[in-house]
Figure 1 (spheres, rainbow, N blue to C red):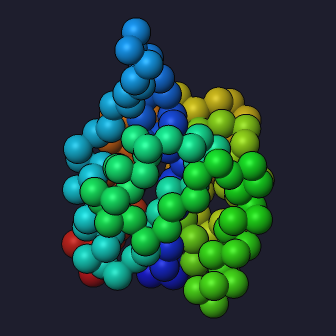
Figure 2 (figure 1 turned 90 degrees about the vertical axis):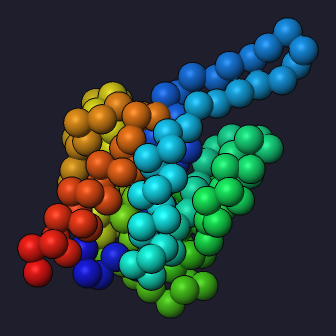
Length: 159
């Protein structure tokens, strides 16, 4: 994982359990896992940029990204590969320097090109077929923490 400089994730289905909670008063909610927040903090301490690329555009995701001090946030993403291309160009890195976590068919194009691809255990079959690492955790239940522990912390402890 020494070549990973940017850690990117989809939101719904990865950072959340894919549930969208709507209330009678018009408000909506999403459940995030606090251990994923700690994992993002650990990545930042390793000088790895962190970010979210999501098709959704909600204040909830913006608030979560701000709380976690995300370096990158793209909402309303219709073409995630174009965004990854922009990140590579802006940061002068290649696909090999990116780890991406996704769970559904709109993530497959990016999952196929990045240096390391991951998905939650409950990702769709097509995503699982292209990922380097399939988590034992389901989306919203510590996927990012599992990836950081397995792919970054264990490696660092063994060196």
